[in-house]
Image 1 (cartoon, rainbow, N blue to C red):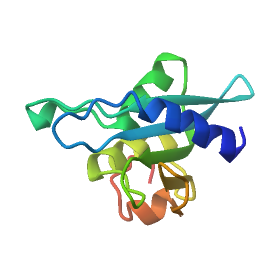
Image 2: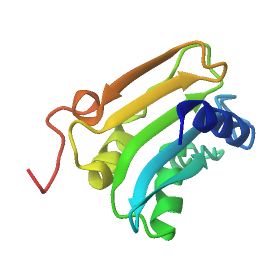
Image 3: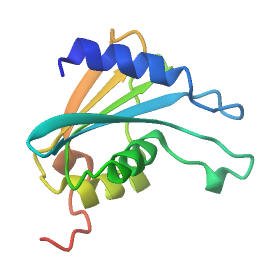
Length: 134
């Protein structure tokens, strides 16, 4: 899927985020292969008055993809309603490690208008990560 279409889809999904406490809306997309075809799964953050029960968009997208048969993430995309792109939190970085594995796996963060973005890799986001495969 081209980045313009993926960003348009992320923007649509972003509007469904549930963030009444922080006001920070986040949407994520994980790309993965299944049966030789590339698929994309989306997720949003879902806040809770008890912040510890909040579900991040990245983990939401990963959970959805697992339910659809995903075994390995090939790329992660994160969009928020903030002026500057935001980065996955530490917990999400570790969960992404579980399913991406490739230290060179791409991570693309963008703001809602797509005017600001940055790209990195899993290895740059979480160096010295806990990984049973290493």
